[in-house]
Image 1: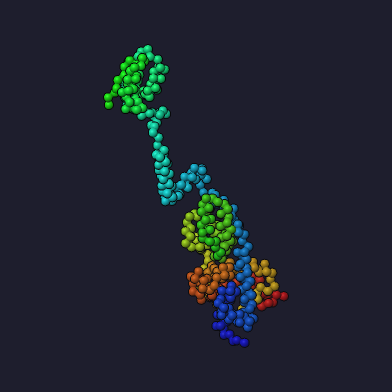
Image 2: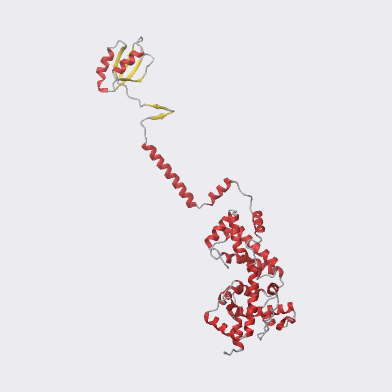
Length: 208
Length: 197
C-alpha cells in the first residue's frame, strides 16, 4: 500500500476535475486511480465532484435549441428595412456583383455582337436597300431611241425584247428612250435594225 | 464548443442576410444553447444570461457580414458576448472577486466531509448545486464551465482563461470547497457527517 504525504494528496485532489473529464495523460490518470483506490475520502470527493459536474452539464442539456428564437426573429424583422421590390433586389444584386464579372459580361456581349456583324457581312447582297425597294445599279446607255408619236407601247416592247435592249432612262418629254444592250459590242447592228422599224423615228449611238 | 464547418457558417450567414428564416433557425439551434451555457457561467441569473445571449445572437445575425471566417464562429460569438458581459458587470458592480479573497475564505486543505448529498433527491441536489455555483466568483464559475461542460484539459483551459495552470487548479479546488460549504448551509448541519436521521 502506497503512502501519500499531504502534499501528494493535495496535488492529486487538484487533478480530480481533469481525471473526471478524462483529459489527464495516461500516467497521471493511473496515478490518480491508484490514490483513489487507497483513499476513501478521495473517493467521496470524486463522487461530490461528479454531482457538481452533472448539475453543471444539466444547465446546457436542458436548454431547448430554439428557445427564444421567435423573440430574436421578431427583433431582426423589426430592425430591417421593408422588403424591396423585385427590381430593387435585381439592381442591388447587380451592384453587389464584383466588377470582374460585370467586365466579363461586357466582353461577352461585344463578342456576340462582333460575331453577328461578321455573319451579316458574309451574307452581303448585290442589291442596295433603299426604303424597301431594291434599286438596280444603273447601266450606261448604248443607244438613244426617238419613238414615233403613234407607236404602240406593246409593239415597242416587243421590238426591244427581240433586240435584247433594256430601257435605262426615259421616256423624256420628247419621246426619247436611253437603251442599254446585253452585248454592248453589237450596238451598230442593233441600231440599224431599230432604225428600220416603223415604230422608231431615229436611233443614235451614245459615245462613251 | 461544437462548431459547424466555417464554410457552412458563412453560407448560412449569407442566407440570413437575404432573410432566409430556415438558415436563421439552423444557426440559432446549433449555437444558442452553447452560448447560453457560456454566458450563464459568467453571470449569476438566468434572466441576465438570457438577455445577453439574445443580444449577442441579434448582433451576429443582424450584421452577418461582420464575421470574417478567420476564427471559429463560436469564438466570434463569445467575443460579442464577453463585451456584453463586461457591460453587464459594470452595470451591476456588485461582485468582489480577487484571488486573495477567494483563497482567504476557502484555504482549507485538510480533510473535509464530502458526504453532503447523501439522502437528498437528485433533482433537489442538482438545483441546490446550481444555486451554489451561481454564488461563486465569476473566475471559479468559468473554471467549472471550462472543465465540466466544455471538458477542457488543464493546459487548454488555463490557456483559454489566460491564467497559470496552478491558478486554475486552485480555483477549481476552492470552488469545490465553497459549493460544499454552501450545500452544508442549505441543508443544515445535520446533513454533514452522514447524520441524516
